[in-house]
Length: 372
Image (tube, rainbow, N blue to C red):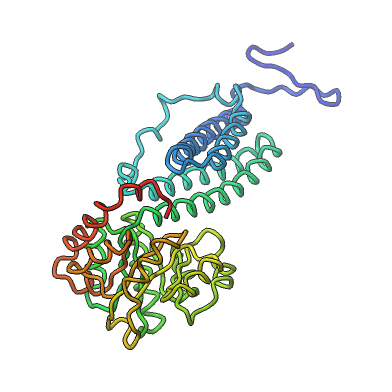
């Protein structure tokens, strides 16, 4: 006879009495609740990412990938798992962190949600092994696909920021480097290159890490001058190469397809070569003679005009550009400029940044709809 509230399971002719409220059953219910919470968390995070792919990047392929993963998660989110949900008694609903209350940029929002998805998938992968080992295998592979999706999407986001950037600050050594850079970022700067030809590697790495953190806090792109190894070491967004530096093809092999590679050019031949080799953007100059490029003759405004008519990729006029001559450069056809001394030696970098951007943003209305 079965006792009240009991049931039996027959295995090989042996009847085993199991209490519904036994420890095994309780653990099973807890596992289901964990799976339920994390399946929801993964789907929510993917939906947030998918919306940016769809409306921010207009990228149907990436949006479709997000949707496909969400649907796969939904297939595993069974009624049996959902039935264990107990939101009212879940102590986790009141847990929060100050960083969750604010997002400083689209980049930080996307990164936060990729972390959310990846953590949730890892939890599902582990706990589902107690429930369905095959489910664990499926979610392990999904987690790897999400890593790839993150790499692809963040690469797209980098290039979108590059396309939107009008002003490019190339740093020079300064005791208040971090303060100057942050002031420029507050003024709207979205593209920074760390350039220091004389520092030893330990100092170079320390400064680069701090600048990368600062740039990412403000949603700006961080580029390293010349040094592909340093760019990799600090997870920079890309590297800028001179004519005597590593070939673009080798840099691309080391950095991968998603990071940005820029190239300095001084004439039409160098421009066409950089474009053919796969540069993501080029520097055009020096427009005027500058101590930053001592001994190098100015390429002049003629080269700026040539770039305006012939470059299919983003380009930045550079070399001796300041608030007094910015409009000459704009009149020659420039819609993006890179500066060094004008900001690094400015008494009020925020205001100077805002002035440059105000001049660049008032030109050529068709530029806003252009990828170049």
